[in-house]
Image 1 (cartoon, rainbow, N blue to C red):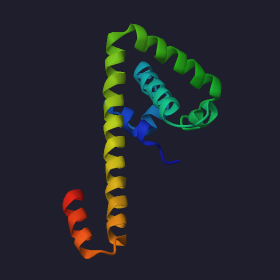
Image 2: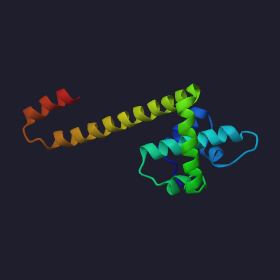
Image 3: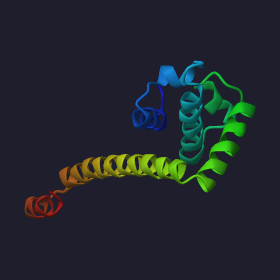
Length: 130
């Protein structure tokens, strides 16, 4: 399974990998759980995946995902540090979305310009867009 950008960014923020977040290690159990909970939250907020589908990324069931969502939501409301982490990751994901939307719009504009018949109008539009 190819992991979504939400999982990649959460793992990048915590300096871990998807495979580490997926497995349970006794030594770093709390860190791994926290990474997983943030992944659950961002996947739920930013995708149309069901709890069951989110759980499949981590070999967990929907009840585990729901429990994790309740816990991380509560922690974000009460713990400043966890709120800061949430905001930092959200900012990064939003900036990636903006870059992607800009890239898509750039190519849409190029296609529209190519379809213009009038050469003078084409030059004028190219100067404005680029």
